[in-house]
View 1 (cartoon, helix red, strand yellow):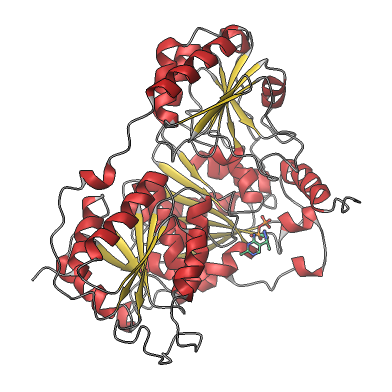
View 2 (cartoon, helix red, strand yellow; view 1 turned 30 degrees about the vertical axis):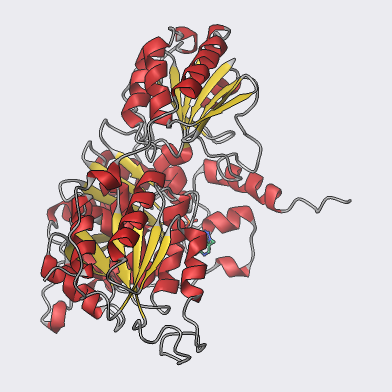
Length: 561
Ligand code: TPU
């Protein structure tokens, strides 16, 4: 018999998922049975639903989509935070919640795991704000259309979507799905609008000498990373990337000129962008953080703004096509604009510290950068880890993941767990501060369970240094943990039989860090956490400068009316 759960399972594997993430609860147990029975995607367990949603978010970063399955309210409301992240970070994550028995809907009964009212639709109402489609399935007959609508909308819009399935419907008989192409196809672009946008953009470029491309945060979800390289080749101009777009353009490309992040840009990048007479922004997102407290917005008459859903140029806005359609059309017609490509890009290098000296932030960053190869995915958590990752030099193929729009501390631990499952042939390296780690530390246990050799650099600077730089107070100083010792506690094994391969190490000097990294490389069947003990005042200059400006933007006085 083919069931609603099988239909969902079939669709998930048709769109390319090899895993789904889950936390069990009585409203979803039958659904989990159905997914196991159908196979196709492997069931992966998380410690809690917040982590489950972040693991799916991290999986989608590598795999293009993901699914998280949770129980009603107590699970789903926790998971909504990671779904908010998927929305902010443009990732199609399907959140699937088990839900009350269809006979109970409208019965006037009070159920467990609810807020104690007789109506259960509050969860659907809440989740609508952080998803692009949300459906409640209470009949097997309507299930295929509802499942398809949710998955199709998420994939098209590169945003999360939601399904809740009544617990007595998951195993009900259901029709089989048709070809997956119906979920993957896009509407054709509007040719007239596209042609006019192109004409206007070419006339913009004709009048500009110093043209620079600025790669933005939404370029990956617009599926246009390779197109941007082709555009750069055609124009022959300089290329910069935004902080949150680190690794979205090969740093080994002759046109690469570093990270543009206002006052905290790579050397030379600020001048290049701000003195250009034509900047092509590709999928840029301007918020208070990316604009360094509203100080560095790249907008106005010298900007050709190419967004995922529109192009704005010469006081016109054009819609009705995708960014990729436009960039591909521009590549064919773009003129040569080499004037911005003067000089060589000189990546900043950090000097090697004496091995016996107390470990510094610079020496830590230098050694981690050395570890990053073309198969590395480096996750950078909120905090000074952002600025350390942004200043690294990346070989071709290295990837950096950050969550600068949502900015939930603790995101990185479950997210890298999901990402590592999606790309087992890559090396996964995490840079995370002590404060952030304390939110989601338990998910390291799942890296032990699934034998994932993630290398975690736990930056112990004894507090919330990013917050100290924005606005200091007693709330920025946290309880210290024995982080290296904690990892041993996760080696208990499934069912308590022991035998995990998690490894916890500590580094207080450059030599200790180098030795720990060598051990981590050899620990191929589990995570290695290296606690890097730093002085609290030791952070990047960029964080200090950025923190000052973001703090000033936060503390602007109310405008008098
Ligand atoms: O490098 P460093 O010391 O700045 O990193 P650490 O130790 O991870 O500190 C991060 C401090 C921080 C906080 C407390 N950054 N942002 N916040 C505010 C915050 C609070 N709660 C959540 C869920 N996300 C946040 N960003």
